[in-house]
Image 1 (cartoon, rainbow, N blue to C red):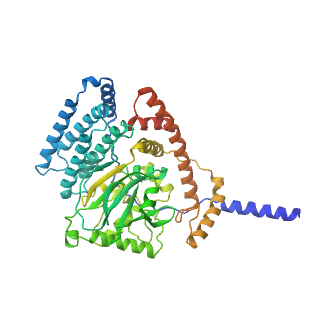
Image 2 (cartoon, helix red, strand yellow):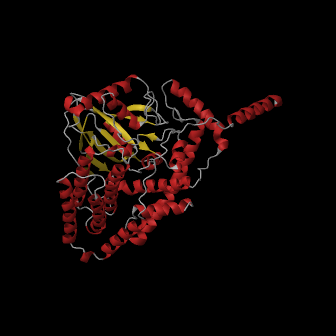
Image 3 (cartoon, helix red, strand yellow):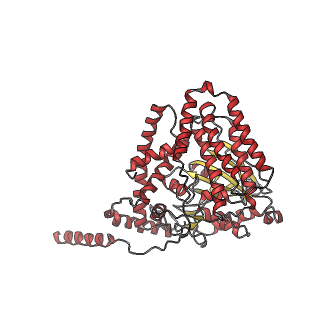
Length: 487
């Protein structure tokens, strides 16, 4: 009996030792050698704007509505000039427009953060910029920088105003009613059409990494392709999920899967392909719907959009439209920061010239129809992002996420169990396409983010009690950097 127990213990130790052997396979990382991350480098400017906001809060009697109206009128004059003539990405009026908007935002936040005229000014600005960019070379660095600065910069300013409204602002911003002949339905107060793309941000640690892990850090981490059934007008959302690959959700499932924000993007009605066939977006959506129903499409952790056997979320829409000669992401996303590459590679990403969700907003073939955000969770969204930005700084400095290598044998057993479940159409604890080591590292990353997020949430509460307002994003990042110890 004792010998049998000894043999079992010995066999267990041998198996544990074998399963403890680390992965030695090399990973081929595809990246763009000449790409570089966009850097604002405006720390002093952000501090000046915060000081302006703080002063305006304390001296509201000096900030009558006429001053804000005059500033809005000045910005509208710049927009009128831009609208009345063609302009290029390097037009200095774009910088003037952005700076004036930055100056206006603190005054609105201090006086009336629910000011709808201010939000419409933002919408008008991006309508004009998106319409003019139709003729720009989106692959040109100057063009890309100009679009990012104005579109992302203005959104950031708008959200700083939102944050001071305590969730009392209207959650939907309607931007442009792009004409469409395809079947339609309503999602959270927005009319969407078959063939639309819903670019969203989920409430998870990995979502924050995807939205920020880009040469142009953004606000979105996921893309869903909308198919609206003819006759019934029932919407179906075709999505690629890490846990189960490409799947189809009904509206209730889509909404229940927590979203912090989403933006509706629609192919322009004047695209030659759509003028020739106005139902093209619907046909593309229907074909993708039928393909997702007819075969299992695993999640593509490598983010290789050239191979449709497996797909990540962006690839679902781009693959479908590509079958109809519409190439989305005319300027492919690049990821060149060592820190971003390191963290994304933790999850198995190998291709760093790819299609990131946030970058779809800048595609000149698409119109921004509307944008919805959960205003009550906006601070949480910003906290998630700030922690990621701080963790990326650590990764750039060479600091790796610590994980318990002695758990590898157990995780490998779990991976074997997951593979067995996958073979019979089930979902295991470790996603298909992710190996045991990647699962162990990703779990350590998620746990590290959770710890930092909880600590930062406490600091935000302390800041709010001390200063009387919600900290702006640059303050959040600075606090998060202090918590990581990588300053």
